Amino acid sequence: MTEDIEIYNFLRSASCCCICCLRYLKGRTDDFISVQSALDKRGICLDDTSTNDEKQAKKMRLSNCVACLGLLEPHFIETLIEQIRSSDKLREYDCEGFTTSVSLPIALQVRQLSLWLSLLERFPSRFNSCSVPDVSVKDAFKMILNRKLGEVLERVFSPTGIMINVFISYANEEVELLLLQKIKPEVFVDRKAKKHCRKEFITRNAFEKNFTPDNVSLAQYRQHIAVPPTIQDQTIALEEVSFTGPTLFLAGRYNKITRELSQTPWVIDGKRKMANSVQEIMCSVVGPYFLVMEDSLIFSSSGREDVDVRCLGEGRPFVLEIQNAFKDYLTDSVALEMEKAIAKSKQISVKDLQLVAREELVHIKQGEENKQKFYRALCVLETAVTAEVLNALNIEEPFVIDQWTPLRVLHRRPLLSRPRTIYKVKAFAYQRNDRVLIVDVVTQAGTYIKELVHSDFGRTNPSFRSIIGQPIDIQALDVMAVHLDWPKRLTR
Ligand SMILES: [Zn+2]
Image 1 (cartoon, rainbow, N blue to C red):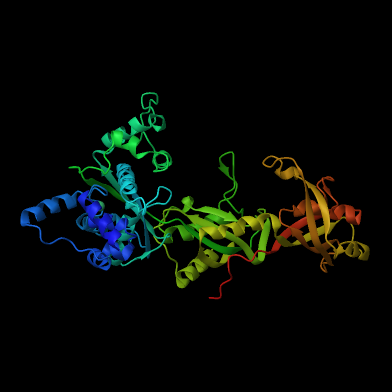
Image 2: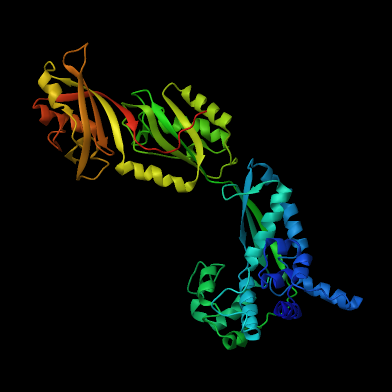
């Protein structure tokens, strides 16, 4: 406790603001908001016996804290918050949550290191060079800003909310960084050598790596830079506030009930082969709700089916990535409306529409290789179906086939041979045509079903053709199930 007071007095004498002092006394968000009670709690009282002149002088110094250069000044933060609150841009976003991104001058870190070194010298039993002594200026600033913004904007702090970007500049930045260059010239970018002349000639990363109490001695630092830092006339300034909409992930399952629709836009040599696609039907409904361009949405799914293959049963899991959205929520009733609007296409329908976290996308990637798929194929023989054929295509035990890249996709896929497991095959006769049979087949994801049936000139082996010992062709194919328990099923 007594040491807290000593540290406080030392930092105040070096012209640190009260909040910066509290940063070195293990301050928390509440302390930075209610400074007076935080000081009381630590037995520190502001000296009120000073004369008016002294008070005036102190006030001057306070507004120019050597550590934060005025960043943590309540007035500065209030002004910033008011600018954010009254921004027309902010009103364009209909977001329940917000998050902040803050860009600060590196000079603040230079000053932080200077204070750190002087505390190490002064209070060796309390501070050591291996552990960070304080709550950083940036963290303290964000703690105060986020708490107050939450109250003023009446929004919750959330990583998936609107991003408020705050850029803070400092007129003396370059002058102060140039002093650093004298200590370690090798970590600075030679701007003469680099023609494009970047504004940053030391990156934040390079600073943080090369300037720590561990690898810069007090003597080295003190030669060129004041320890503790000196008072500046210049304060930091608010350069810019901008807004970025959240990136959202909308997941669901789709059914495709037509044999004339590609999954993604089908374009060959710049010409469209088909007017629409699964992706475009979805995006035309989802895009307008989040106020983004339809073609800016990124579609991915657990596998894909060919243009002429329907996708029935529980449907295929998919996800749409929506960047820079203007909304960050989706109510059940809106999700239902979207599902209805998509169903009006009469080509696809979707269900289980929901926003998911970015981390959940691993499920859709895992699904591609490992999961089982259940297909139903309509096959035709050159002669009538016999009991022997049906028996041969009634296989309960899993078996492995060797499948070369099909001729029909060789123009866009590399030539290679892959083993694929077939888990189950079951054939049924078709009453209305004695040459036709229906075959249900459960396979490992990534199996080419058409080739499994007709063998692709022997490039898939074994195949239904080799198993029954006669030509067989496939007329139509349906995906019956994609065994992936993601996203979660909804009952609405
Ligand atoms: Zn300060």
